[in-house]
Length: 231
Image (cartoon, rainbow, N blue to C red; front, top):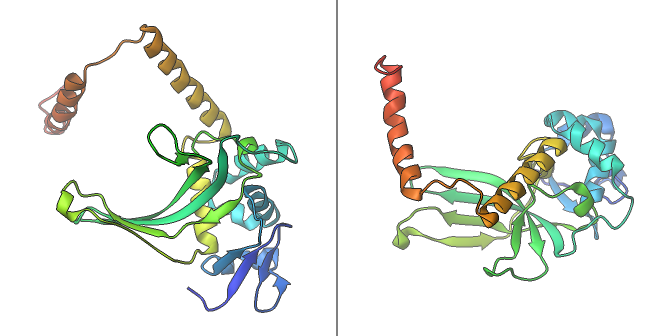
């Protein structure tokens, strides 16, 4: 973490807060580890304005070109989901008491709880025309346990800072979970189709105990093949 801050502005520029001047597009990679602030009212659209302007940021992830192309095709206004109020970026540190995992999580924040009481939703299948004009927000860091032992479980949140890298890498990783926009949309259609088959009773379902048995036997089968015992 560095002592000075850079500001992501709504006009697509990144500002050196100490000097009150825009950072050169040619030098932007030198600022990836610096703490950032978001200009008031900053949206996902403003984020894409920045990545579109600072083209060197696009080389950091192979999925950027496809999503920049989708961004340019979106309407200029009113690109937001009806039931979503913001897109939230959050640092997560979780442990299973053997290994510790740290990553950036990105979720859509619902306007009201769903039937399970949840207010956070994955953005994996969200098109940009459903999120560009939503506010982009930073959440406190979440430190939690993923242990199955109840006595070891914990969940805490603390104030934290975010770097330019956290945003540039974290958001595109979440958006591209299923690949480029074309692949994302096809996967969504396939899942919806499978759900309809289940509802209609035409889907071929596999009992849970059969799936569990296959999962348990698979490592053994792989080991046999490796040792030359299988076909």
